[in-house]
Every structure is written in C-alpha cells, then in structure tokens.
Length: 224
Image (cartoon, rainbow, N blue to C red; front, side, top):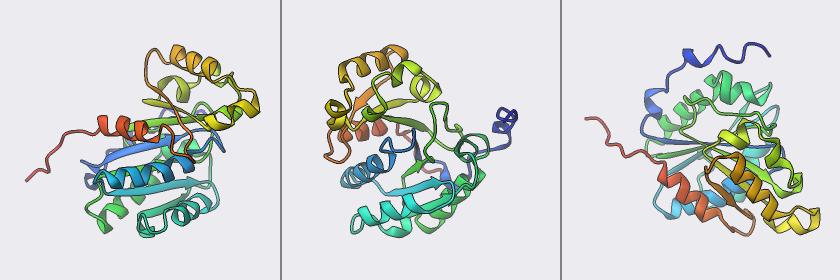
C-alpha cells in the first residue's frame, strides 16, 4: 500500500465531465450511503437537475441494483451504473480513478444533459478520500450505530470531507449513541466545516444535504 501518493498527477478530468457537478459519497459499510443517494436523487430531480449515479462495489453490482429498484419510476435505470472495482475501494476513487472516470464519461456520452453525477464509493474505513479529479464535493457518511465515539477517531473522511453526514439518527436511542456528543465532537474535529444529521429513510436532513451540494455547484457556461 506504499504507492498511494503516486497516482494523482497522471489524471485530468475528462472533457465530458467538465461542467458536471461530481459528488463523491463515502463512508463505512452500512453507514447509509446508498440510502442517502436514494433519498437525494428525487430531491435533486425535483429541483430541476439531471442526475446520474455511479456506485462502486468490490465484486458485485448489489448497490447499483438496489438503487435501480428503489428509484424505479424516478430515475432511468440506464443512469445508474455499477463499477466493480475488484480491489481496495480507495484505489478506485482516490489513487487511480480511471474506471470511475470512464464510467462517468460513458454516461455523459449517453445522457449529455446530466449536470449532477453522484459517485458512491465502496464501503470503507475512516481514511477514505476522493481524488479531486473525480469529485468536486466529498461527502462522508457516518451513522449513529457505529457509536458516538466515531467522530473522535478522526481520519481524513471525518475531518477533511466537505460535508460530514451523521445518518440513522432515528436509531441513536437504541444503540446508546448520544447525538449531542456525536455532533459536538464532529464539529470540533472538523474546524467548523458543516455537519448535517440525517435519517435517510424518513428524509430528515436530506434536503439540507441537497442544499449543501447545490451551494458547491460551479457557476459555469458551456464554452462556445
């Protein structure tokens, strides 16, 4: 794993993906990344955005299939693509995002109107980050089921992501997680960068996540 810092320099964002807001969504297995995407997409579409979703799984298309089923009738299934990374999730979104850039480029060739591309990483640990070539905005998802100590563990996902989402606030009482402690610690280790509490299944907080994503959208005009 010693080669992690060599790869960034070789990549440029493909031309097709310029002007598209690329949102990377990472976090541990089971934190609710897929559920957050499934709750976000209808809101983004309702606000007039044209959306594509690219999920990363190590060996299966499980997440992509789940998103297709959940968003049936909301988003054309052809706009939801799974990438089988076959290796450490970091590699595909941070060190060598070639597969993901290719998947995004291919989707833009098919659906030239897409203005928002959501990249879900394979479930991983607190050190996951996205290559700046792949994602303009990096959202890291924790959930209360992992315990209120998680923000104190820091890690680049928790401290450096553009937005930290603390998901599954509805189960906090059942897993003895103190939301106030979790939120306070998260804000402290993030030096004031935003933290949003969500229950993706009920939709609590998801509109705020959409607002945050919108605030990062570059103002661009297609070059003539």
